[in-house]
Every structure is written in C-alpha cells, then in structure tokens.
Image (cartoon, rainbow, N blue to C red; front, side):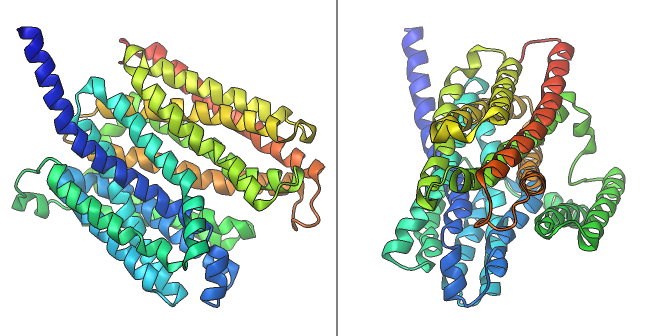
Length: 475
C-alpha cells in the first residue's frame, strides 16, 4: 500500500511539473531563436531599409549587448519580486519589442527595439534556470537542465532555417512578428502553470539598489561594446570603453560593500564552487565560440562549400548539443557531477587538439568529427555545470546566481568572438575572402585552437583543484 501511495504521489508530482517545464522550455527556445533567426535576414535588411552591412550588424549587436548587460539584474529582481511575476513581465517586454521591430521601417528604431527585446530575453533566461531549480527536487534538476539546454540548442540551430523559410515565402518582418503569437501563448501558459509568488512587499520595492544597477549595467555594457568594436582593430575607443568599464566595476564593488540591500551579495563570490564554475564557464564559452566564428571561413574558403552547405554543416553542432544535453541530464544524478564536468572539459580539449592537427585534405568529414566531438564535450560540461551550481544554491539568491552564471557564459561568447577572430585574422592574414587561400585559413584555424588549448588547460587545472579540495562527492 505504501509503495502504491509513493507511485501515486510521484505521478501527481510529474503531472504538476510538466506544465511549468513546458513553459520554461518554450521560453528557452524563443530566446535562442531571437538570436540566430535574425542572422539570415541581414542581407535583406540592408536593401529593404536602405542601409549598409556595417550598420545592420547593430540589429544583432543590440540584442546581445542588452541581454548580456541585464542578466544579473534580472536574476536579482526575480529573487526580490518573484520569479513568476518577473517571467510574465519579461515575456511581455520580449513580445512587444518584437512587434515593434517587425513594424519598423527605420533601421535605428529596429535596433532600439532589439535592445529592448534583449532585455526581455535576459529576464526569460535568468528566471528559467532559477525556476527549474525551485520547482523540481534536486534529483530531477539535472534532466531538466539538460532539457532546457537542448531547447536552447535547438533554437540556435533551427534559427537560420526558420528565418530562411519565412524569408523565402514572406517578408523579413514576419521573422519578428511571429514572436507575437508565440509570446501570447507563453504568457497564457505561464499564467496557468507557473507557481505563484508571495505577495509583493513594500520593503522589496524600497530595497532596489539603483546605484548598483546603473554601475553594473555600465560596466558590462561598456566591456561588451569594446569587444564588438575590435573588428576595426584596437584603438583609443576600445581603450576608453575598457577604462570606463573598469572604473564602473570598481565603483560598483564600493557601492555594494556599503549597501544594505546590494544587487549582488559579494559574499557569494567567496564560494569556491561558484568561482570555479564561473571561470570554467567563461573559458569554455570563449573556446566554443571559435567554431561559430572561424568555422564558416574554413568551410567556405578552405573546403570550398557553398554558404548553404556550410550552414547545414554548422547545424551539426547545436543538434549534437541538443541530443547530448538530454542524455547527460538523464544520467548525471548517478555520478559525481564535478567529475562529469571534468570529463566534458577533457572531451573539449581532445577536440581542440584535433583541430590543431586538422588538414584541408581531411575534407568535410574530418572537420565534422572535430566539431561534433567539441559539441559533445560542451553539452556534457554546460548542463552538468549549471546543475551543480543551481542545486547547491539557496532559493533566496538562486536568481542572482543564475544571472551571474549566464553572464559568465555570455561574456565568454563575446570575448571568444572578438579574441579568436582577431587571432585568426592576424595569422591567416585574411582581408578579402576572394583572395584568401586554404593554406592560410588552415594556419589560422590551428593558431586559434592552440590558444584554446592553453585556456582549456587552465579550466582543467581549476576543476582538478576543486575536486581535491571538495570534502564530499557532489551529486
């Protein structure tokens, strides 16, 4: 009888969490689609809005800048005002901004709409990870994190195909406007399935750390903006932005130390587990971004694939991440999470070493083997790293930690895009894709992954130290 009762309780629990997980999975999907589905329509935007390729890049940059800059703020607000309340606010911001973008006939209005949409995307990303840890028992968090990671990867991989299909049959505006019915659907489902928040107290509103918000936003925004400008070389503008970012960060630390209700409780950064995960997250994201930045050049120039063929080949990575994240999530609870993270890092290291040995004569198959191997390692690392930290974090600060964790990932992606493309350009000497040759592209690829190996060695050493210092097995 007791066993029957336990099975009934388990079935009821699974039923009660199925709805929230469906909503959160859709949120992860729509936030990632908003990044990758826009890339394919940039050429159309150039002609339709009568602008230049350099200017139209800001449609992508604005979204990423504001998404990255508001992740920590969104996470902290979810701790203060409630996750469901903030999630609903985030989907409204995201959806309305997408609608404005789809109706825009002016480039800079579209850019502003994308910046606001990025803020909504940051809320969805930060709240989703924190809420998964809230609504599920610890032994169910790993599979859920794997599912969220899979949905994000599917969105990233399907985005260009999704945007291309819409552009072929309709107009570029629909790529934005399609978010309106999707956003309304998610809002309605969230209102029905997401668990309610506690009543909002006057104390919560009075405790908003506005100076901290401004300074942290300024520090992250100026840092990411300085990275985006390195495409033209490092100059006085980059130096000024980096200096402003450092100054804002120092002022932020000073303000937080003296604040009664800080945006980030700096004491949590004394946690060795969290610091280890943040460092590894940043490094891995920097390395993985190499495939997205360098891969198209190698496929198109060195292997002489068409743009369409290269796009299909690149889709192997997010597809692999989606499948692997789900599989790792299902088995992670049976093993030491820290050792699974280390395994993921070694797989990425193996893939990076293979990339340094890759020759053009190995063809597409050789590149895909390396790319898929790296994707397997990345998915193994990411879903397990997120699970380790979120299950060990108190629900009172889970939103803040989620924001910081996602911030380290996004800063790694942005840093990788800037640093690795610079190294590639210097070594390959590529200035014009029409005059580039496969040998130089190959040398550039090798140089990028040689640097990646150094970074990964640091991440592996940090993880090994963390395992040895840990007094217990983390599961």
